[in-house]
Structure formats: C-alpha cells, structure tokens
Image 1 (spheres, helix red, strand yellow):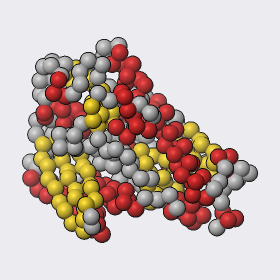
Image 2: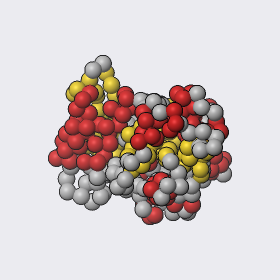
Image 3: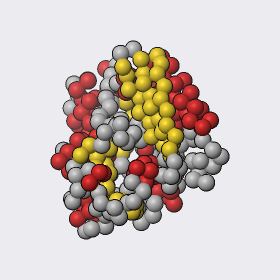
Image 4: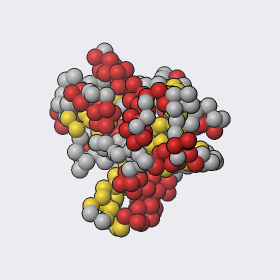
Length: 314
C-alpha cells in the first residue's frame, strides 16, 4: 500500500464545488485521509470545479435540469482523470452514477434536521399568516405548504451567505437551511430553531458527505475504505433505494430518513404533491442487511396509495 499513498510530489486531487460549504466538505475528506495515513496536507490538492447549479442563479433548479446540476461537471472531470476523487453532498446526488464511477465511501453523517432561519421569528409556528418564506427546495416548500397554506412561498437560491443577505434585504421573512451545513460552517447560531423530525422529515441523505471515485482505481478504493462509515452507508442504502424506486429528482417532493436502532433499521418516508395539497407517508422496520429492500418496499407502499399524477402535481 505504501507505494500507492499520495505524496507532495504526487498529490491526490480532490474535486469539489467552490462554495464555502463544499470546500469545507472537501477539506474534511482531506483531514480524514491525512489522519488515517499520517499524510501531510501537501499530499492532497483541492480542485474547484464550476458546476451549472452554481453558475445559473436566476432560475429555479427545475428550470435548469434538476438532479445532477451540482455534480455533472465534477463527474466529467473524474472520468477524464482531471481529478482522483469527487466530494459531494449526498442529498444532491442522483441515484445512478455514470458508467465507470463508484460511490461507496461516506463520512460519518451529521445532523439531519432542517434549520428554521429568520431575522424576525423563532419558528414555523411563529410565522404570521401571509408571511413570505423563501426556499429553492421543492420538498421544503411542499412540506410547508401542507402545514401552513396561509404562507407565501417564493424561490430562494444561493449559498448560506447569499440567503442570509436576502433575508436582510427583506426578500423573505424566513428560509430553511440544513443544520449539518450550518454546523460545518460554524454558523449554528444562524438557526433560530432546529425543526423536529416529527414535524418535518429531511431530504434523502441530508447531512451525509459522499466520496466518488473511478471504478478501476484500486489504490484510491483502498485509501477511501479507511475513512468509510458503515452505519451511514446502511442508512443511505435504504434512503437512496427508496428515492430510486420513486424516480426522485429535484422536481419531486420526497423526504426520507433511516435510523439504526440496535440491529434493526427504521425507515420513514413521505411523498407530497408539489403544491403541498396532499402528502402520503409510511414507515418500515427490518434487518440492517435488508436496508435497500426496505427502501424499495416502502416506496412501493406509498406509490400504491398515490393517485395517478400525484408526484407531478396533477
């Protein structure tokens, strides 16, 4: 293995988006590998890659293509050998990888909850009728419309800093961010409250960092195996199988969360009409080894209850 370790003269190139949160995640992967193999920082090179989702800010994610907007260019660089690994927020990842790429390394998962962020109010319950809430997430907007149809919902994109500025400018009275992202950026204070999982289920794979590699790169596979978290992998196997069976994309409001309870897995899932007029939810429990099967079974249960056109909002 020693001869395969990265070094300052042959660094491992880590591909990432350029946002502060994406860079933190890439640096965390670097820190983990440095610690696992006692390597210097110079043995790694962080390569920032511009992706469509970051470059086009004046349109909704639905308008410019849904899932893959934050990953496509990075995966192309990986296939073209411009980078050696790619670091992703797993909630942004399509359920299928391009041929030749493998996603089988996850860091330990962080807080999965959504954060309620506002300069005026402390929680969803405190929002007065007619208050404006901004979000780019169709899931969050549908979940909020279901619970509070009296609120006004607007498109709200950008990184954490951009969204906070929009709140200051009065574009909206409140928004939502992921607690994991705020924690990683040292900005937990920005959250007025963390939204209980009993109130709002998060996006599938929220709070998880994944590391993608080329399928034919055995040396990198061995490196990543040293920092891989098995519990996160089991939870995501259930959630992403659930998402895949539902054919989930950024155009589909889907929420899901798997939790390990001893030697069993508890999976909860929810699908919503895009306008928030109806939701269908369910849960399954089963052995850890059957995580993916649980995800498929729960998805089929919810689909069986959904009328035609449900996920398309018809």
